[in-house]
Image (cartoon, rainbow, N blue to C red):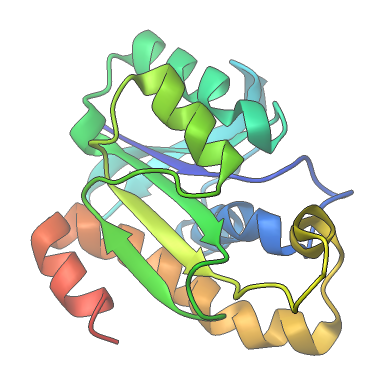
Length: 187
């Protein structure tokens, strides 16, 4: 069983923000694979289904971004999921807007949600998918940048990255992390 987690803040208040790219990828997977993400429990909204012949849990923690790890560890412990089958999807200002990168492991950088995940899991060794949102312009407040609503044009420019993020999840499940990294990271 895979646990697929998108990081974000509760919708609809934070919908269509850079910080909710992880939720947007979960929403895309939900639509593509007809997995309803409506169950409430373990501090999350979640749903179960099948992707590439594997049972999955799609999860959107409702703890707000900076406490995401608290919800994720509850799923891992309750369902006894191996860290190699936990995929975390999140926004990354250190990637150009629209770029998508898969990593086997790695630190949080400036991302507080990932800091919470790493702290709660006690490791950096789990697959994650980074959705590039680009950096704020000079002197723009970082928090305001990541949680402010995107214009229609800005959101449209990130839709391909959301689709690629969903495709990355499917590829990791079907082809493994190394093959998926070679394919997605070279785009």
